[in-house]
Image: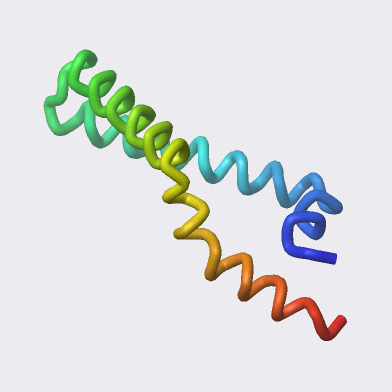
Length: 80
């Protein structure tokens, strides 16, 4: 069983991870607003982030970044 199927086998773990991600992003947006950024500024930051993610995905940069992690998880589970 790999790490992803292990998470899928326990839906409550996925729920906790999802709640953590949403809470982390909400805190980040709250802090940006407290620093005095306008709504347009926060929207611009979010839009820029999404554009950077799309470009990185298109160029295959995520694959290069995740390759060592895939190797590690595959080699760690080969003995089971």
